[in-house]
Image 1 (cartoon, rainbow, N blue to C red):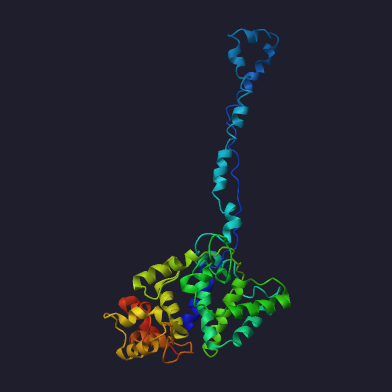
Image 2: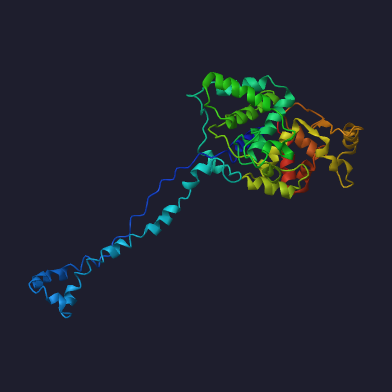
Length: 376
């Protein structure tokens, strides 16, 4: 379970909404004005020819005098100060202009960038009971909802980072939000987040972000579902996102029918390696699933699912009314966060094609095998 702890911590840092990065710009000093102009003044000593003012009219004497006309060239050096085009080098920190969009910017960042903006005990001075309040709200939830809170945190982080954008009902007038994307229609636990937020605001005001509440809730759900064996400090300081687009859910969230290659690529895009991907898959040891999410695994002739489990699931998923029934993901210890999932992977007793896919590559199979020996 230590691995699960580490990975959930990594996930907490995954693409979590980065704090605006104030880049200190050293504007490049304007190019030193060409030294040639200063030397030209020496010829200026012929100011003694000031007596022949008319001499400047004669073209012959002007040659020495032309140095004095270089007094206009100082403007020419001024044109070198057109290193204003040099401001493009100041544009090298385009970060500043994106400052505003940096909270709701492009797709999810990698874990390394935002980590520097997060801190354990972030609300110690502004709302010291924030984490306690969230934990109390999670403690009062059912085990099914606790499992839902872990999934809610994961689905939030995998689209635009851990910014609570999955909670938004409306954002862009031209688009529905993430909440209504196909992978998110079965998310649960919103009422726990709302309850915790309301209590925090009553006690401290509007100082704790919804993004941090979702993160705390996911952490606390693992604590209670593991019978208080898994606990870790959760860094905080995330910003709430203002952008939430339904069309970003399917491309970012790994589907239950993904191959092992697709899983590796999808997690790598979020800055997570294969080891972390296998660890996070272990969250499928708790919670429930709709039958439609693994129906391909029940009907496919190529499915390697344990025949006994397959028969049981076919019965549980059968519906004369067309209802999309639900079943537990781990039929051995369905409400306990343990390492049973990895044992189920090895014995072909998992629901999703993406779970079974862990046995399709040597590295993921070996990692699954090593986790089955971890103490639950």
